[in-house]
Image (cartoon, rainbow, N blue to C red; front, side):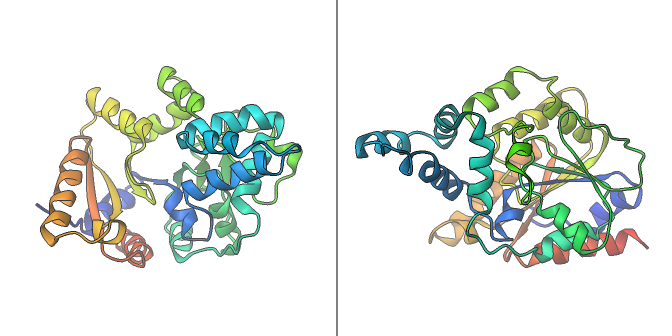
Length: 291
């Protein structure tokens, strides 16, 4: 089974303006932001451990025993209108953040439609560092797809690093189990419409995503079911990078299983053995597309 995708194959779509990017948490983690579990753990600390009076150990243990999306729902109830501020503080506070080579490669790729499933604005910061313009789009934004500036869509919410606390209240953040339930139950929601539109009209390159998000998998299956046959692509780390010690054959079997599963959703996987390969791969796609 083929486990690599040549950059030439993807570059042909980019050359014709038919390539879009979906980016996920792996991009932000590479810049110093927390993994999902660390984000939720920090949120628990900010919402409950510093609360006066401090909840009992039993209450904290009950809260932390829930699923991450259930914890987020409980945190939203407890924090009220300050919930988005808590999420932003948990993302950015006390962290050394650096704009990665991967972000710079995306900024310089020339790809005009980028769907960020992250809450942060590190990609926007990357555009600023490279002295390039872009437009950030959230629910309710006005935008023109024919504008030559790259557009960064934020279907799961947007919490800019230097945003004011009052500003955070204006954004819808998809984090808790009821947020995801709303996505599943409303196929015409803004978040679903943006993603579906890109999946239907473009070939998408997924970067920094595990490809296990239930809503994304549902949208991929949906777009295939309505007749879309064009291919999408995902860069995924080899199981050797993400799993414990296994037999070599086990790694191969896992890769083949994931590859087959994704092909059923019209997604071809490009497997990497080192995270440093990502910016080089994106740069190669951009370079080839210019010729």
